[in-house]
Length: 377
Image 1 (cartoon, rainbow, N blue to C red):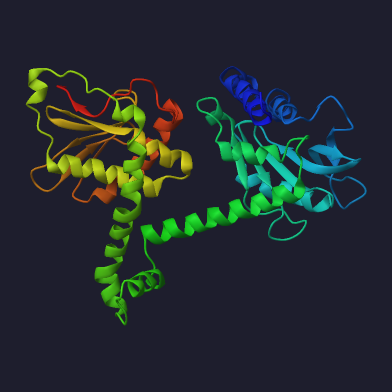
Image 2: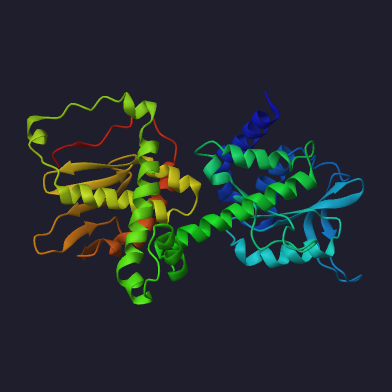
């Protein structure tokens, strides 16, 4: 087995034990013992060898009463990785400052790891030497690893973190590229969601439209810029995701005579297309974006169901077309029914339910997923 394959197998084996282990991890110490140390061991660091992993390592500028990082991973007698642990479920973002202080105090440290046993955030010092960056350059999600393969790009990065492949220079270069790429995506997504005046002027100028008044851009062209981006980039990507060998070879299930009489309306299809487009912008990461290909619909008598992977367990909402301009979107509890004439009103509930369904059902394509079809309720 290759190095990356071996690493993937070890991490996956740990992840698959999470459902039974996390319930006993009621404090920081049990989290370290049952969830953190196995991952360090999988990365090649012998947690039983004090020359490799030292617990409670002094990480402070003070000589007495100094703070201590949970684990220091050693190389040639000096710490090169600082690992700070929190109990299962702890908010990692709120604890980044503590790891940053240790990172600065330990001048030889090149990598910081912050974890609650379920998520492992990896930090370097791209922005300023010896000052930990605000954002992790890669995150290992062990809960997700229990449901789907660890992304290849994450494994590639982790290969530079293992004891056998520890390469601070290569790791920093990768980190810089990933952080810049993440920021560019964030900027572009924000501009597409709510195009700024400068962004609109730039795009419109490239399209041959110049010297436009601010009021004209805001009233007419900003929505055109947003819609054009969707049509040019988002929709083709989603269609490409759906054009998989599995979907191409899928055989539509047999339906009864009554089901054949159900006519899916233009409005219902517009709702489905809106859901796919909006989820592309609302997705928080690449996993959520790729999961959009598993969003389908079923048309019933009296309602139109949009679901993720499973029409029952993965239901996102039921849509009932209104005759007075107000449509009904019935989400699972506790959200309930939303009656609106503006589809943008469902964006946040849609995002919340979609994220929940991914956590519950995973993002991998199960065998035999049917193509959208019509059934009697």
